[in-house]
Image (cartoon, rainbow, N blue to C red; front, top):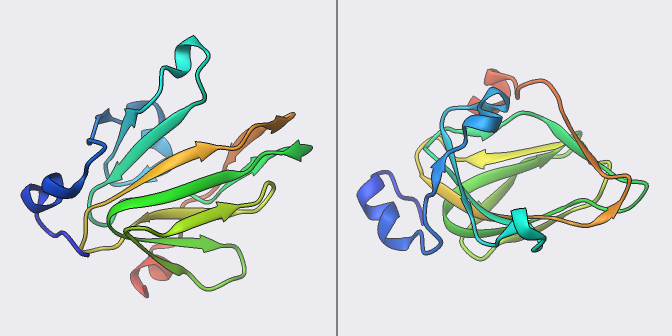
Length: 144
């Protein structure tokens, strides 16, 4: 379901908006927010609710791993997009689960006219790293 107003979105964003995603803001177009759901600083599996304002999306990026790795997105509120390089964008709605294999170039974020949240899980693996790449071209995003 699309949520154009923050007030309507907040009523459904059950995992909470969190704080501005300042540490990664350089890799996003628009404003995003992070709400840690686990005590990852004390060794718990890192699990975050990521909230995107309408039109916000991240740059192309790759979750590298020699073994295991990748990312899982569990969409919890609003509507967004996910795209792998060379493939058409996929619509994201509440309840959508996306399993992103390691070493696949991709991006994800909100639709232009909806707030959006997903839970992000970084899949454990060997020699994992995240490589941030170029922004999604405005023309490409605006066609969606």
